[in-house]
Image (cartoon, rainbow, N blue to C red; front, side, top):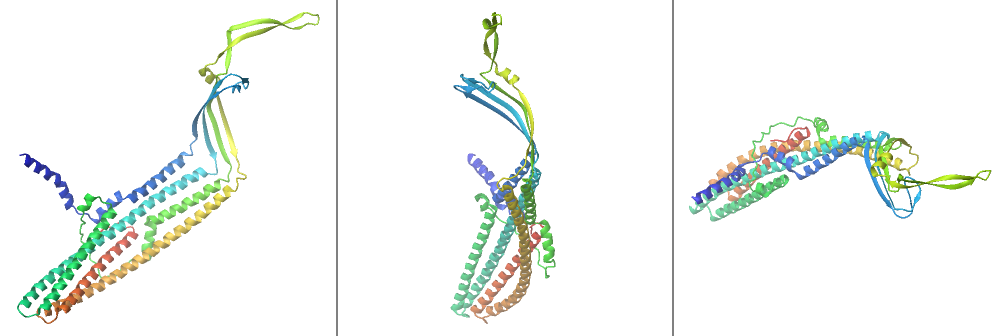
Length: 476
């Protein structure tokens, strides 16, 4: 009974892995997985979040500041009482507290332009994320199609082996019957060995293409073991040229592709950077307010009337010689409490300050000059990005046209070579051609099929690139 329970547990444990092993990945699933898990995309998204925080901070910088201040000081020996400004030989402990605020009223619209610049920086960062997503999507589509190509190439090699095995069997029977020399059998067997090597090489290329896609997806070891792609039904290639022009593709790409938008936003950011630098030449008007301030000193005291005493003393004489008496009051002092001093010494103040830049070691002029250089550089960068995009579209369009022509020519060549091979095969079966001629014809057929397959997938991928430039999603 215990053994059956263990078996049941093991079966239930391995069922999910069996289900995973049977799951196939479509191109859309591969792209979606990569966009969610790719580390480079996540890093670029962090840059966008950093730009978003900068935008928020630039907006908050418009608000007035509010800061509290507290200070404690202990003086030993003869020192100046901070409240009475008189020298005292005693140890004095003092402190100050305040709550103040500062607000910039005008600074050449620098804060306003900084908000605008931060906004454009954020938009550029977002477009950079989209650009990276597009690049990774194209790389995955290329790797995916490479697997499909290698799958069919391996299937062609496998089918060729099956045909050759039949020829080996037929040739062996003819040799045994004395119709052919043994050398014919050796030649066909050598061809079989060569095709088996080609099949092994095709399988190795398939494994490498799978590894390439797995690395692009950053799959872990568990997912890699059971990774299989879905084999979609590819669209039929029609016998027609590409009707869409390079100009139409370019105009669509300029309006949709993120690398163009990113360059445009960076140019606008540079324009605001120049405005910020020029704002440093303007006067700056600020308002400062101390909402509450007070202080304390241990040297501060007040008369203790309970110890008041009065002495009389002669302070002078009248003109008739009589004494003039004065009163001398004596009393002790008692310390003033911290609460009473904070209440008695509190104060509030408000001030407005104006700063006019006159000469600051040419810092403002150099900052403006650098901002102009950066603006010009971003203009060149935008122009360069557009030119690069046009060249890429021109190349992709030319590649698609060439791939279509190659496919059409390869299909015609394959049709002719297949006919010739069938004719040669029939003659070989009756002993009218040698195995060398037969193998040569068969090799030509294999190469023609491989060329057609390569042209097919090359054309599909090039057309997907053109669709991508036109803002269409990548799918099969």
